[in-house]
Length: 185
Image (cartoon, rainbow, N blue to C red; front, side, top):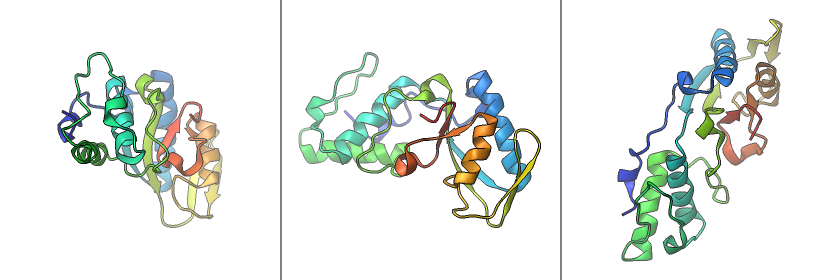
């Protein structure tokens, strides 16, 4: 049966070491620049198995988008039963999964991707914050002072710095705030 016990199965990673080697170098250089500038960074996800992406996606769809649990397609190797004896129980189980996966930051109309770059190690979810002007080194060694708001990973000036390193902010705006990848998807 679906429920919070599925969160621990098919574990993902929060380690940069598990990223694709090319993307890992880009991420680690960007993270070093952020650390050198005094920014706070919390990594919530790097590599995510396809089975975990499947569980995250469909739990979100049942919980937030009124998808009937009987309509969730099966995935080979994931013997989950989405439909409980009542719709309320099914939604409750999926709510517990969404909370366990820590995907509550997503808008209701945006489910976690089934075909995510996390599965190939080419994406990272990270929360970035700072309190004063951020004086950060760019990929070519120059310094950029970011005094504008927000003082988070949603700052467009920071996006430009990340792009120089090869770490591209998700192009979908506020749909998935912590997501960065090799190509912005």
